Image (cartoon, rainbow, N blue to C red; front, side, top):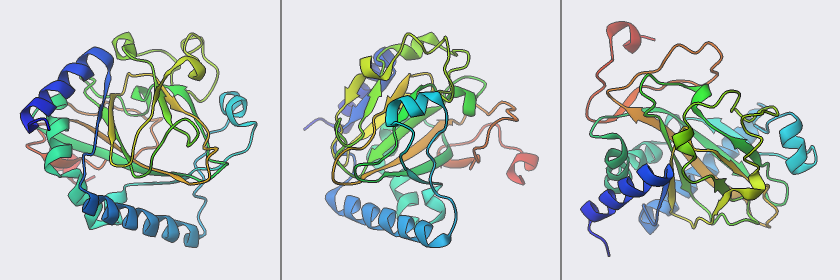
Length: 262
């Protein structure tokens, strides 16, 4: 088994080259059971709430992938529901990999729970994340934590290796057809066949998407968006995302009284 130092160094090298890396078995079996238990509890609470919890995107890109009808259960910020999830975000192995990519100071922007129901789980068209929450120095990364196996049939993710080097593409949110994204169809992207307990780390420039879930079991993931404590969010009036500004490691160098009181 790799030492922690070797694991973190290898992750940083692969990430710099490809714009993503997959870390295997980041969490212990015991923690995975606890995290899935709380994941399921969150989903149950959402389903009982009466809120609209279907986060399926709209538009031509989506309709082309799912025929116009699918479902994905969603909420922001699992750490607002569950102490276990907050503890998971500060786990040595998870945070160690994040620090190898971002440095010692890590700020949480938000998390997202996604459950793709069996046989009708929604896909996501190819897109970049940067336009939703741009930062000054473009350090924002995502980490997708897989609580279930996610191969092609189960609505697995796909990425374009090296696409982070393209930087900020215009109209790359994936919501609508775009000339910037036309050369990057989902069908030609590289599959990420993740296993339960794996974590996919990727840049917010990396082109990525995911397939519909056609399997008999739900696909369960939690997405973590975080950035360097030396970076900060740019004004973005179009963003609908909350910004937790929770320091997971080190220091937030741009925190102020006004920001802390938002």
